[in-house]
Image (cartoon, rainbow, N blue to C red):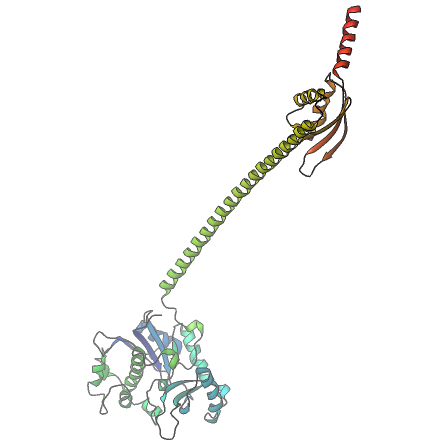
Length: 428
């Protein structure tokens, strides 16, 4: 995500002597600034402690790419010409090819490779590439990784110096011990480069005391500077030169503040999202409740309209029945008038039929609990000599239909009964 402009390299030779250098892209174009150099303290007997001492003195920042390099015991380096394959296919091809070149079983070594470039040799197909392979004894590799873990320092990659060279010398082990030969491997150096000449100061800033180093210190420092320059120039990356991935416990944790800020921001966004979802859920639930309440209210209104329509329909049928009745029987209208006056407002007459002094009618109501009490008052009407309920029926819409029978007295009979009553009072 971020390109590092700083690099810290620590290298130890076969004798366990550790050298370190922190380098950075200088302000001057084409020059690299040496920020800090360090050599192992011989008074510290344990390797992890010496490694940690070098690391603390170099004091790399979070932006530094940290490379560990070593001349692993029993390391084998070779170059092969192979077809240009994808990474996974190249791994398989090397798994078949390496047993022919390594005198030990492949399971006993840790190996890696990097592509040098296209092969420009006569007789070699142009589709072939030059592959440099480094194989290290698994025992030696595990020992080095254990030392790094015990030191408690972090590193991006562990490599062998030969993985950084642009071209593999004929006698690489000799070059790794000769500072004059090492100096020739730096890009842009003339063929007659020498330690005593100031060519190195033209490439690096901050190496004023380099000539005072011992030959071993010069060689170790040049290896650190060569690896650092290669990383800073972008020629190679830690993944290109590593022998094998380091354990996660050794990998550096960079930009922790940025990550923590991002994590806090993500947590805050998630919290806001949860609050928004909860608010939307609550609003939706409230709106749903209002919709349910309004739906119930509308259903009640619709039911009232249906009942009113049903009542009006039955009243219309009653009126039509009255219209179809023989107009000669005028007392029917008087009976119906009395009934309509005496019936409660919750009841209405839907149909009726008459014969002589009798009348059959249907009375509808929605309040059936009080129906018997409300209808009992009809027995007290002087016009009716008898009022009885024959049956009842519950309709699908909830209406209670009551089938009633009425015997009413004609006007003559009522007058005769009235005269008799008056005579009895006078005689008495």
